[in-house]
Length: 229
Image (cartoon, rainbow, N blue to C red; front, top):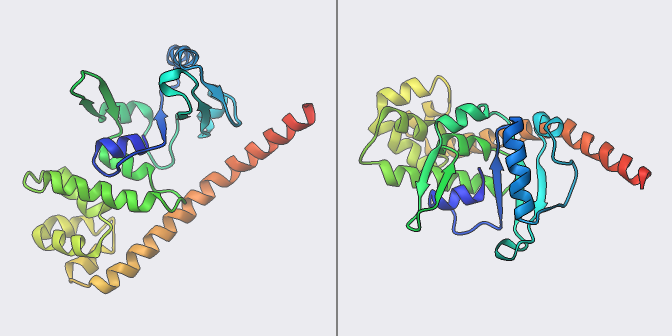
């Protein structure tokens, strides 16, 4: 659900860790714990791996020590802000099979973009590259879903103006959800630049508000552990 998925989609060259989103069924958690034992993975931060914390939206962090993965950080989540439940994500996932036969299940591009709308500076250029890579791949096969994705998620004024000109009917419909597309329809690139910045700042603020109580829970948990020694 993170940098590794962006690598597969052509929006990044490498990632230092692996982020995954999981189903919280008891069977799946048992399988996950078994995989972590095989990876010789140790927890590197609070909270512990449990349904209690994952259901609240917390991430659980591990460092792997198996020789082939030594030092690899693994971040596990079950709930993502603003993103559909796991069952929906799994149903519309992208599956890639590499030349050596390994299968990789990725968040669909629209879900990955939504998951990347965080407070972190590094995520916003990644969103831009994800959407642009998707456009470059499918611009000659523009389905209704792809066109809507580009219109709702593109983050460069030039691309938005081009899209609005190429797909005026779809742009008019999408502008009901993303009002800055009205500027794209009128070719107002300068105004679009400012509107895109404001859109990003608003999303960052929503992410900060979402994580604030979760961070407070983690601080309380760290404090209890220090007291307990």
